[in-house]
Image: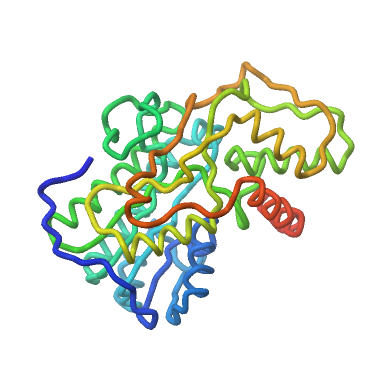
Length: 327
């Protein structure tokens, strides 16, 4: 959904490593990976605030923070996120919390004159039955997936706000829409996690306990694309330095697997040798969600971390942190 009213005059280039860079959500899955990437790339003035230190839903507090910190660059990676169960059970929370977080941060960044900002959304913004692979211009061309429509609407509003800022104020802000992410720092909570970390926890616990079976939701037939969060972080910095435009950019690998295939791979990685059962009375969600990553490739970036390689390191991280991760 490009906007021909966009008149931003900006030539992307290398970001100043000494300038102040605020990562909103720097303790989350994506934000922590972006923080690690920026550190490794030599950024020396990174700032972040935990939710206890700064509630992004508190407008006055957010404006006060920006007035004091005055960041030059911002990545908005803070959001309330969850899987099918959480989204279906708490749609008001996912809509209200994310709208407030986005509006507060983007409005405060605008007032502060942030030069370069990257807003992160989700591939769930696209129509449930969008042609595969999903192109950026299919946004708002069909009905959303009902199990996460409230979250999707919030993220769509964020994209529109980025485009509006570009049109009205001429700031070179951009949006990126990642596919399903996984990796160190993920949410492995049984009630709040996405499909891949939920499967890792389920199969690892079964392997450790010697369980004979594992039962998963749905039929196992939906196809999903998975991107390691360290690849996502690399893509974010690359886009901030090499892309400018009003249309959101898909970030993914360009290939997908069935949920059944990912379950089999995880079972193998964790050492589970029992039987996998499927509860077909539970919802599958979107039948397929594969992103067209042509725009990202045109900007000069492709994913580097293979799925099994990424799963091995993620399982190891989970095992190393199982006593302290969110329950």
